[in-house]
Image (tube, rainbow, N blue to C red):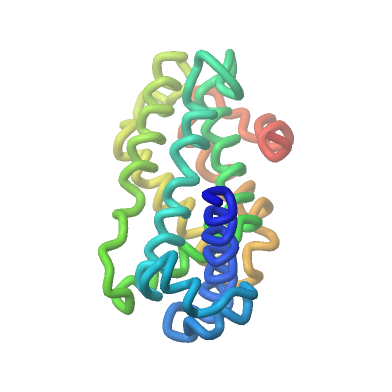
Length: 212
């Protein structure tokens, strides 16, 4: 019974996410979500109580995607981070995030809902802070490895990298729904990496990072 309820909640969440992504918060109704999900409006109210709570669940799902992904690329004891230089891990992480924004409906919808946050009568999680902290940590590790240029301040550079990264996403979403996001991201790193690296080797990182 519990498994069936969780499946219903997930179906409702994904149906709502697809509509929020397509139409925005104001353009999506409970009736629309019911029709898309194949469940009744009553089921939606039972599991989520209101459209606001459903939108909040989508945004929370968006933010819940990132901690395990960041851990995969920052934990040097296991996984992708094992014996991989920090700057390469940062590039790999950025491409993994880009693919999630392009391919994961909850991630995409959560991003759109956050930009429409003034329409949603519910407190939403704060964005970007965790990203700045994660990138700062990776740049500090790059410095310890001797790969970060001496003039770079990790915290200030991290803030700039995060701003540039999400700026690329905003433009890519507007131009082609992120279909070319990996190409745009490669262009961004081609500009940023030579300034960050002690010995610029930006071109060597892209083939490996895009396959990670």
